[in-house]
Length: 350
Image 1 (cartoon, helix red, strand yellow):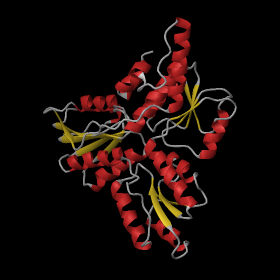
Image 2 (cartoon, helix red, strand yellow; image 1 turned 180 degrees about the horizontal axis):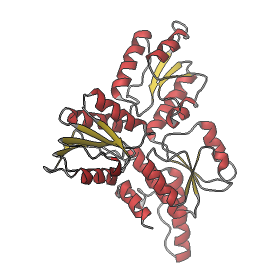
Image 3 (tube, one colour; image 1 turned 120 degrees about the vertical axis):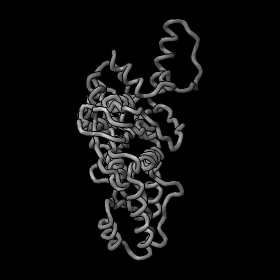
Image 4 (cartoon, helix red, strand yellow; image 1 turned 90 degrees about the vertical axis):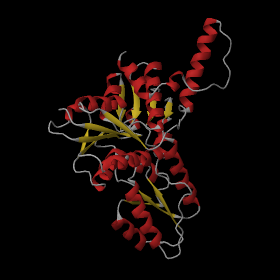
């Protein structure tokens, strides 16, 4: 299906939080005998989840399904406090792979709730991140998806009562801006964080998409249907006037009638090899042009629980082999310099 040319949006694909989570689960698979358990899907990508399943990872939606003493990872989307507490019972080793940007929102909810605020949280009902965040202070949080929800919430709040506005990290920038503007009109003293709750990776990927949207006959978004930031990319592409917008998990799902200039991007949980497959399938006659809007250099270190486990193993092996005691503080794990997609590929070849 050769098309004329491919415009490749950049940044695209894995963000720092996804990199952190995938590398951490890959290390758990290497260190522990299967099964390794994960509460919810580690990230919202069908291909990544299936690859981990083949390596012996069992994904559960209830921590009571995890046997006592079994290793358990909590997903990148964040976990309700009571679930995290329950997970650590019965001698389980628990590694929390929550994205630090989600942790920031959890902290904001906790602080504002203690100060007596009603918190309007803009997010998607049923999404794991929204479930975990609203559970931090359920008595104080109102989940808002659209203007109708916002108007309904406003009618139930006493005039002059303190109100805060927070957000799921993976929203469409334009949707968030519209709801924020409406909320500010309803609540003149509205509190919002000094730094937006929207993830830098989410906003960067949407900006990169907008940079190519006016130049393409079709836009392909690589990612899964349960990925909020992937669906946000679809929505942004349509709002930007792309004549045709397609979301695919893999290259095999591409239709055979694409032609002209085709744009390609990927959600924050989609591995780069899937993008490579899509570009090869499109087989552009006039080549590929990468359109870069910003450089991303963010790095999130591995979860502390995992670092503790690996250092304990290192000390044990050192003692058995007569090696000197390692320093108490060390840098990133050995995979820290490798992209998560490479770590996944290595894991898949075992």
